[in-house]
View 1 (cartoon, rainbow, N blue to C red):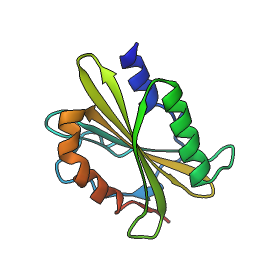
View 2 (cartoon, rainbow, N blue to C red):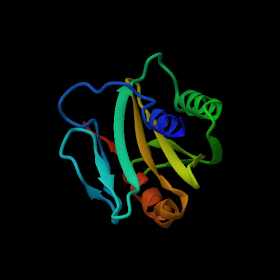
View 3 (cartoon, rainbow, N blue to C red):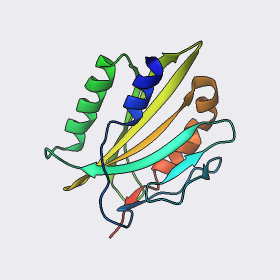
View 4 (tube, helix red, strand yellow):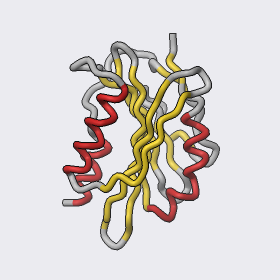
Length: 152
């Protein structure tokens, strides 16, 4: 059941449209791209995963609205909010990073959801892995988030 909930947490958004990525972000140094498809996807040698997705901003909401909605939804699903960090990227785009903990077997897992919102889209940078592995890449992930920018 918890494995399904972790998958649900990573699957908060639904579908992608169009051909080109509406964003750009440098992959954290320790991550390697593993899929050349439209969403940016990466993984570390020990299995910490990273994915960027874009979904419609519908119903229209602000960064604050979607950050609060995501937090409330995941907490109701059994995740524990461990930190919230709002920041501006190098291109002055506002974003909020929410880190959640969830017991998964004998390990605690981290699910990190970073939210960026523009008029038409919600951009989600999602990273997950066992706490002990994830924590080694926390600063790298945060530095990569600072490079997130909208295309076009």
